[in-house]
Length: 171
Image (cartoon, rainbow, N blue to C red; front, top):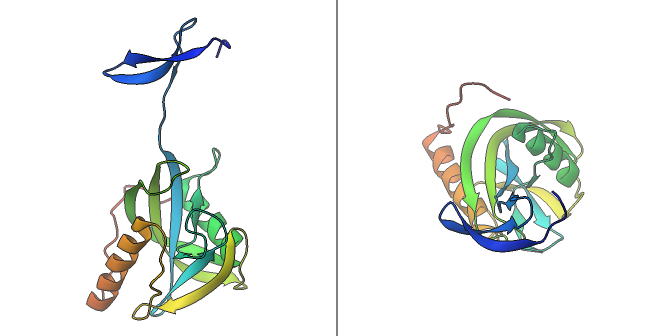
């Protein structure tokens, strides 16, 4: 904040970077990210990543939240950028902590969604985009949270009921 030098100091029982001149503390917090679980009948939309981490692996359309957008809007934007598909959010499906992305830790907010328009095509960060039947998902899935979400999704699909996370207000 004042251009003073940051150095590790004990602050609230944890070592953090702190400015010796003005006392500013740099907190290393996780980023917010959002994913869309786009269902079309018994199929889910996935992308094959064209970037690291997990280049060449299949994942749900997802990305980091911009400072001026709520998480649901992030899921809509990222899905369109990566797949060309326009979606409508059904509701909040899960919130998970992401620890296997070497770029940064993140809180992943996953939404269940329906395709409502657009043209399916690989876009930003994707070398391929396609729907997979829930009983024939690819083996090479990137990110542990994608595997967790897809396993839960398949269980929900088999039971005939998608277990949504109750919220007080929908985005």
